Length: 297
Image (tube, rainbow, N blue to C red):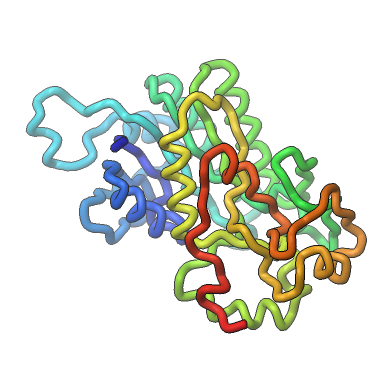
C-alpha cells in the first residue's frame, strides 16, 4: 500500500539507495536533509533537525509545489523514516556528534507523536554492540548478536544510538504508536563489493563490523517492510544481510578469529554473526544481494 513518507537524511549513503527503492514501491517521499538529493520526483526540504520548530514544520508541509493545487492544505503523513545523523565518530567533535544525534531524534519522534503520525522508523546502528568504535581490541560478549544483546558502546556515536533507542521506546510506550529502530550494519553500496577480497584477506579488519554488512538496496527492502507492518509497537531489528563476510564456515571462522566470544546457539555454515533472524521471521525479509553474487570465490 502506497504511503506518504517523510524521510530524513535521504541524501546520505544509505538514504540515496533507500529513497529510490521506496519510490519504486509506490510511496510518496519528501526528503529532509541539509543537502539536496538528486532524485527525480523527490523534493528536498533543507532543515536543521536539532531545531524543534523546523522539525514540526518539516512534518506538516506540502511535499512539492503540485500539492498546493488541492486547496486543502498539507495531506496527512503516514510515516517518518529518520536516518539523518552525524554518521560516525571523527567527523565532528564528540559532544556535537552525541548532541546532534540525540536531540534530532528526540525532536523527530516528539513532533511525529504530537502531530498524530502513526509510525516512525529510526536508524540505529551495529555500533550499539560496543565493538565498532571501541578503544583497543574489545571482544563481543557472545555470538550471534541479536536484539536482546547487552548494548555497551564506549563512544559518542554508539552511545547516541543507544539513547535514541531508549527515546523511541519511551515515546512508543506513552503514545501507542509504532516505532521501529533498525540496527543498521556496515552499509555496502553496489560499487563497493570490490573491497570484499581485501576484507577476507585480513579478517581481523572486519571484527569491528562483526563480519556482517547490509547491502544498501536490501536496506530499502527492510524499510519498505517496516512501512507495511503495523501494530508492533516498539521494536528493534537488526538490519543486516544473511551471511558472514568470510569464505570459511561461520562456527570455525569465529572459533579462530573471535575465540573469547562463545556461541549461545548453533550457527549455520554461512550465518552472519549479527543475526537477522528477527527481520526474516517478523517482517518477511528475503535477501536479494548476497555478496557472493558480486565477489569471486
